[in-house]
Length: 257
Image (cartoon, rainbow, N blue to C red; front, side, top):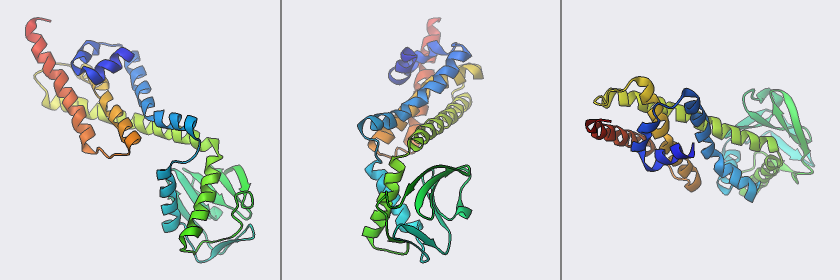
């Protein structure tokens, strides 16, 4: 697999020698490559189990903008709520009121005297407001210090939940896998439509795209590590890799291979 990965990134024309790989090898490669996207999560777990600065700022922004109410407050560690509110933060659903629970996300529910995680109507773990140093908070407050206090309590709760780190890993992997398959299909179809001089059946074009599209995953990793938005450039590079490989086939064919 490493030989194929190295060729796919550094020497795209060499991937033509792998287009007759068995489907089992192809499927294995497809399932393996998206794990690259989880490397930042794995490395971060060794360095720190905490939320990144960027994620924390996003949480503060969510709380400040969407998780507010004039009729909800915590007084001496007890929630007093005359209405229900909710706000989404990545795959986490911040909730006051059980009527607002999501069936498809991880719910962080503000209950009577504690914060509790709820998944598919099942309570996972409960931590009191007292233990989170959140004795008093007015959800209508626009004071940045108050918003940071609430956000920090949510952050502390999230960081204590190993299931959230597992969900983060799984979501990153499966999102990357779906994107990888999408790019493979798109680029193999485009090669069929626009790179017609190389007379190859669709199954060989698909197998070639599996390897040539590896660069898309690598660029996705770069995007995560350096927090840059490559946008259409990712797709463009994937297509250039296909042109590079198919052009090499046209050069090789007259040699009699």
